[in-house]
Image 1 (tube, rainbow, N blue to C red):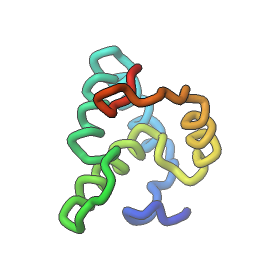
Image 2 (image 1 turned 180 degrees about the horizontal axis):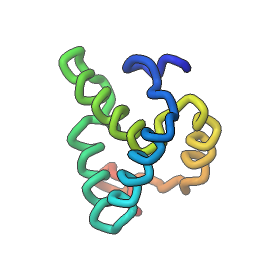
Image 3 (image 1 turned 60 degrees about the vertical axis):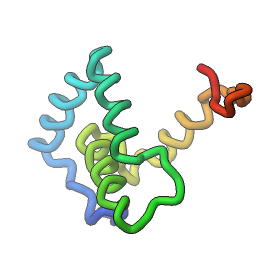
Length: 99
């Protein structure tokens, strides 16, 4: 097991795999995806310049992604592929990217 920045990765036991599958079923619904997106925003997953006080929120976001079977060292290659497969969207006049 490797350190994921928030402690040791949870071993992929049969029980943990069942928990991952149950959690993913919930978040794979359209409503669940919306909730996950809001959670990641609330937990500052996409923010920069975090203060030491913000780190517990970021770690909670990572734990949530770990509970979905995503934030794991053995997924690094898949995460990089997913990130690079997203289209580059030029900034709008307001400075935000359009979807």
